[in-house]
Image (cartoon, rainbow, N blue to C red; front, top):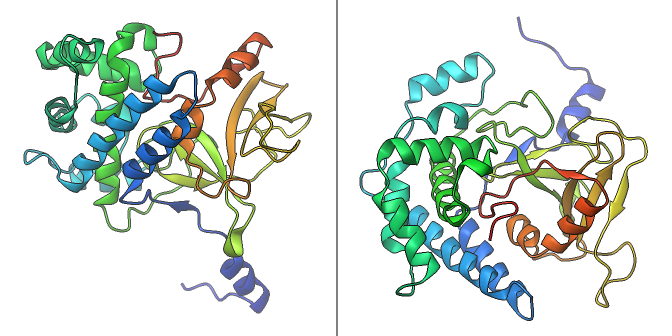
Length: 309
């Protein structure tokens, strides 16, 4: 039986913000440009430039996918939707081999100076058997960084991101629904990497969380901890510098005293060109400060091994 909406209900439905956005097709090109820009004068300039190069390889995997790449089984994706599960569930797909062509292609396309640490990391990934690669990927997806050699994390993470983003972009009308928690991606079930506060159009000021794996963005109300869902006592911490007035920094961490966690948020009204992953990697000193103050980071960045070299 069809439901008849009253006029007020129709207006409410029409004004509801979009639940999610898929990443743009040029996502990794945007990240590369931002990383190169943010690297200028940065103490981690070499690392940021390296990650920019990796992002350009990721974009090539979207523009020219490996010829052996295949989409996940559509029937299983349908079953996942019927049971309220993320259709691109990282927990299950990472144990299969669909993402491996993206890794092999990344290893072929990634530039590496001779006899460098990058060349050694790529060679180690290339020499590993399928079982080892899966074990490392499972550990990385589940946040068990200690089980993955730190030098391998950015390249393994980059391949996983490219695979999941490509699958999402190639699926029309994925019919995604909210996850079990505010911080869980509706597409793949991975945790959010950061939040983005939009600044244009009808939905100015709304917060969208950015997935650490597939880069899907989903709407979550502001002034609420995405981990324990409380609003009391939330604080917003930024790095003070000469470029921004107090309270106008483009990146601030939403700190929750209730669960001692925090989530970085990018405010596009203060930097319209800001992008979540690059902003996160260029603000690691804020993570160090918050860690010293006793707060824990629950948001992963797959191009960074916490505590790694």
